[in-house]
Amino acid sequence: MRNIKLVIEYDGTAYSGWQSQDNSVGIQEIIEKAIRKTTGEKVKLIGSGRTDAKVHAKGQVANFFTNSNIPGDRFVYALNIKLPYDIQIIESEEVDLDFHSRFSAKRKRYRYVIYNGKILRPLYRNFSYHVGRTLDIEEMKKTMDYFIGEKDFESFMGRKSIVHTTVREIYDMEIIQNDEFIEIVFEGKSFLKNMIRIIVGTLVFVGIGRIKSEDVEKIIKARKRSLAGPTAPPQGLFLEKVYYD
Image (cartoon, rainbow, N blue to C red; front, side):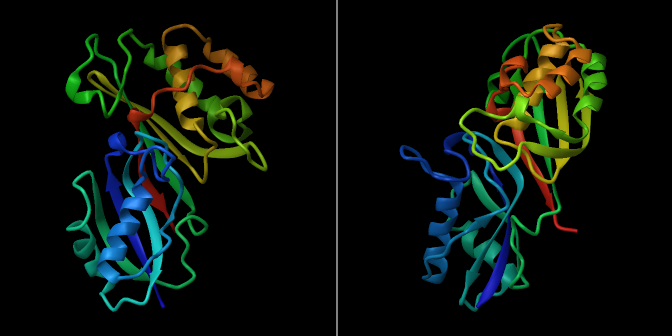
């Protein structure tokens, strides 16, 4: 038995997310079918974490067990010819049997992209959140400090979530402005459902003056979802990298 690690890039526009739903197909299922065609084996692909419908990934990590004798670094080629162009393997390698793409992960980096131009640009619509109003970037940057560290993020958790604890730790955040694009970078070990998107929605509300930056600390302590900003749309979110050391 061998353990194969994959690093995957995908455009999530057409998919239900990492996992399949009743009425749409997920990235995991597509790759599992490609593995079955390649090895003749029905495998369970273990992802580093779920991504929601329309969310993208530059560096999703997954692993699977196989008896195939295909060299680990050749799976990248063997699978890509069987995968659609919006899902591709960018790295593959054989790893220790105890490697687990989810439980072995030390931290993850996500990037959320906002297009802050006045007019919705068709070519950006699937890969950014269009905010047509002027954003106060300095106020948004001031607000970041409230989110960094270990906190109870219940106010920033999507509804119908079932978790043992709503405490999470954000290691670092950064806001980068490049002309009309604003990128918000998050690093942490794990995040609640929709947590990043709700934080982004809250930062946007700070940027347009709907929420005061100093009120964010109160929103966190209140542990009430209704006090935070809206959930930003999924297409602006990218799982950028998963770290294992």
